[in-house]
Image 1 (cartoon, one colour):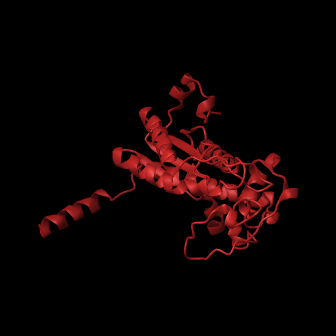
Image 2: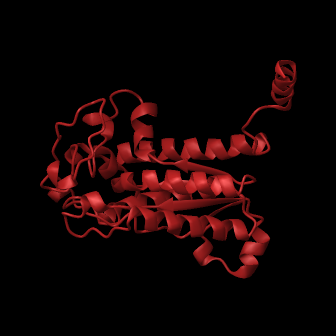
Length: 264
């Protein structure tokens, strides 16, 4: 089987791999209750990336980033955070390094909510500077299962929550040796539905977890993993078929130019 992890490849492996896509797993190091590891977000993003690369072909996985923007989790041990501007610069350098070696299809697999805004800034800026790059971000993998799996799969909050039903389920499937279900505790905070309150995590839970991790199962985690991997693999396959083009067709561009010439 072709190697997919860049840290395990030799120079010869890379040259012979004919890689066209780089997956960038981005996570965090922060408290996830007493039942999940501090590296939860990174472990999930990294393992999902490996599964995606194995199926997609011609795809390599960059070593995961274990540090994210976790300022809002700093009140619980053992959180390690990058300031937003520093995370943006780190991402800039990672993207630039990938581009330097000729890979122009970059897909970020994000595992942590605090990284969403820095990723948006970095990816947008990189695209402006390098318009020949396709850069895509799966910024909230944890929302896909609740939307795409059969109704009733999750018992609480569509599986959402920090170290809640969904995260704990996928952990039981991907790395069960790191999960201690005897310590699983969670709470449901009273957050509003349609307005995004910018909270500190200590305001929401004394345990480091929200949602209900006690409802987690390995089978739910298997279903979650499959649906997320399927979405990204299908995206890569569809983009390949389209020649990595996603904008206006030639006919549409010509119609716009004709319309603009009439208006002029």
